[in-house]
Length: 114
Image (cartoon, rainbow, N blue to C red; front, top):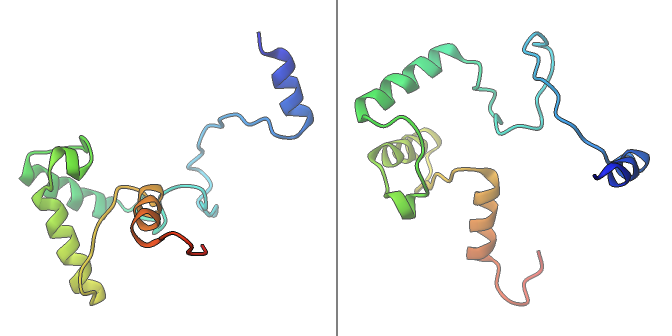
């Protein structure tokens, strides 16, 4: 049904398709994921996180903090960040996209240059 459109994308070098992730390349540097700190493969850290979640009785995100509520684990993590980095305060947001959206909505005003 979309053969012509797909062919046009391929000719333009804009055709993209999913590829299976291969964990057998430890030398690869992942610059495209949300694992900015490289923590996704730290088994000890993962086990500690699982234990922490078990103590709260919740096992995954449900909705934004404004919808589902501000959970004690959020406050604990923000306090950890402020102590560790000597920040005045911290606000944990679910993704880089949401962080940028919040930043631009909050700080940028009319006639500002971004």
